Image: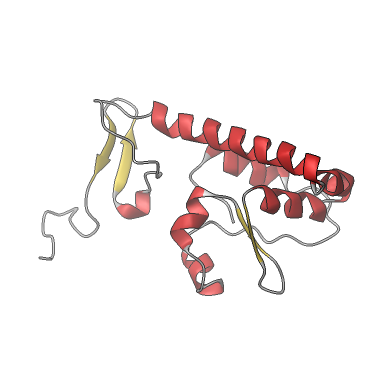
Length: 151
């Protein structure tokens, strides 16, 4: 699964279209399709960390998910084998942490007005919208016309 609203994630999704030894089905994290196909997953967590679900239902997250993904690619399977060793695992973890830091900086850098960023991404489906001139704004789902259902 990948975050469809993250530029790094979208780039990697496109990069994964290369020749494979094992088919990969790329599903947007926390999407209706993901919820339908994998009802037992914590879909909020799939937005925070790369998650791979194997054909037998096994779930990989973080560095292990990247190793499994590389293992599926024809030209990168040897690298996946090297990253599956103890010293390679440290390198894989470092790569995942660097990607997460870059991704977080992209979202954090978009904040204006001193708003505190809670470590989560802002999603259009949750009511957030972004305007380059004014930054992020929130309209609760179902309230766009000013008639919100009482809670």
